[in-house]
Image (spheres, rainbow, N blue to C red):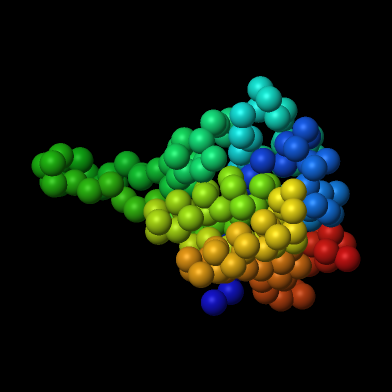
Length: 199
C-alpha cells in the first residue's frame, strides 16, 4: 500500500524551540520536518501542528509553525485527547437535493472527502508522538510515522517507540519515501520542486 497525497494529511508534533536542543540529532529532525511540510504544501496536503505546554516549552520553531494551517496547544501528551481527531475528520456536507423530497429526519448528510492517511512526525517520539499516533490508530486512521523526522532525547527511547508503533499497525517511512509516494511519477507537475527538496 502506497501513500496517496489526495488521501493524506500531515501532523507535525512538538518541534518546540526550547525542546529541540535536547533532541538526539535535533537539527536533522527539524530539517526533515520542514521538508515534509514544504512537500505537503506543494502537493496540497493539509499540514497541522501541535505544541505541548507551550507556556513552558515555547512555540514550534518558526519554519514549522509557518507551514501549519493551525497549531493545537495542549497539556495532554496525546494531541488526540484534546481534539486533533476532530481537526483531521472532514466535516459532513449539508444534505443535497430537494429539501421536500424526504422528511428532515430521513435525510442523511452527504459524505465529505476523507483524508484518512495521517503522516505524522515529531518529538518526543516515545511520549507525545507515540501517544498521539496510538490514539489515532484507535480512532481508525491509517498512521504513517516519518522516522527521520522524529526525535527523542535518546536514540534508545526513539527506537523503542518505533518498535511499538510498528507492532500496533503504524507504517514506518522516511521523508524521501513520503515525497516519492505522494508524487507517484516523474511526470507529476511538482516533480522538480519536490525533487529539489529531497536532494
